[in-house]
Length: 176
Length: 197
Image 1 (cartoon, rainbow over the protein chains, first blue to last red):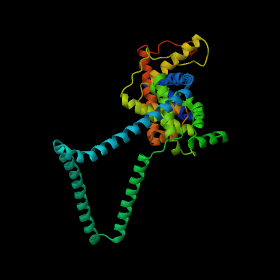
Image 2 (cartoon, each protein chain N blue to C red):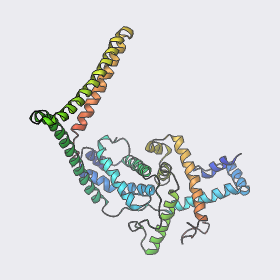
Image 3 (cartoon, rainbow over the protein chains, first blue to last red):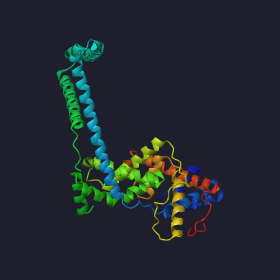
Image 4 (tube, each protein chain N blue to C red):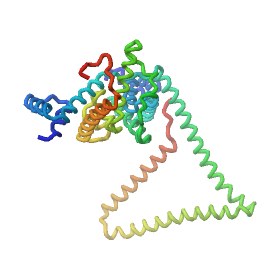
């Protein structure tokens, strides 16, 4: 029998049966390593058992309530900043075009923004073309049932996405 | 679970802040104790315990009343403490500088407090030799009498992984004890300890 088995017996939480106990005792008299492990583990067990759990400083619940209030305030203020940033960006985009007509020097900036937006639309348009090609090809090779399933899957993903967006945008405050 | 506690949990799930505060008052000793065992000092333990209740409060609607509330809380606490360890990479427990003023001994008297402190230092030094997840498994098994199944569910492990982690932890603890004795860390026997030690 190798040392691994004795090690398992030594550290086991279950009591050994009589025969195994005798074998282990015999082994411990002849093996210094296992004897040392047995002694050390016994001492560790005693120390751990005697250690009573520490207590938190008084007023834990009160401090938690304060922290909860601070957290709610921080979250509210973050949400406010995000809304403010979104409104500012939208306002800037909307104001840029008429402003460019008044100040010709802004035209470069307007062109740059317009190009960016056109680029984004071009990417979406590319994805749409690929998707259309894919869908036109499918009816010839795939049974209608499969197409219906794929459609249902796509609809489910869209619904999940919309619900997630709704939850993010209009997250309810937990009652304070 | 008593009817009163069920009612309290139900009120807390509906967003009653007062009911949740009562739960904090009831369960904070166990949560704090776990955090202390995991993080090794009262300041971090306080912070982790507070954060645990904050997370529980936010996720209260997802709590399944069929399960024990304390099991759910301790699972949040254990995973938070493991994350804290990952962030810090390695937490060195400085026994000299660890603030002990907030650790109040259950027994009165300076001597009893000293003994209590020494015991805590020994235990924390031993636990500090384990990896965070092993430490969590060991703490839940040793002080909270969790079954292998409960530990597995709490730490997202399989039962066999829990068993092997616990075995490895016991070997590590025995080794840490031995090396601690060699470096005189635990050399002095405390007054009430057995002479065998």
